[in-house]
Amino acid sequence: MPMLGVHQELEAVKGFCEHLAIRAINMDGTCTGEHGIGVGKQSLLEIEMGQSVDLMRSIKQALDPQNIMNPDKIFQLS
Image (tube, rainbow, N blue to C red; front, side, top):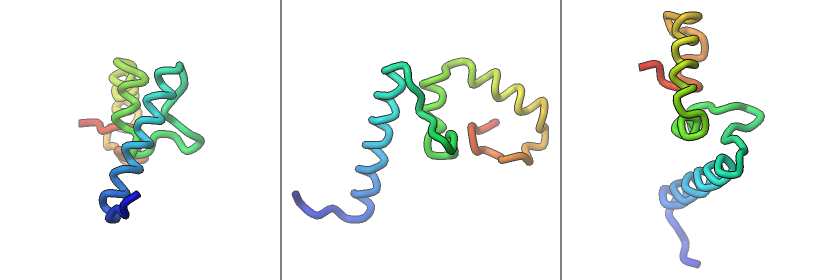
């Protein structure tokens, strides 16, 4: 197997992790882990939860209108 550069290796790992998460979602699992979504799996949350993410955003905006509590850790508000 040829040696990859650091950037290529990082992209390969990210792709593999996304593949695993999508496979878990397709098997009625979740893309989250014990530490939640964070910033790396935000796009996967919408795949898993669909339009429920819009409801989550509206609740977040109602409870934290200034977006000071863990800003942008689960989803982007804008």
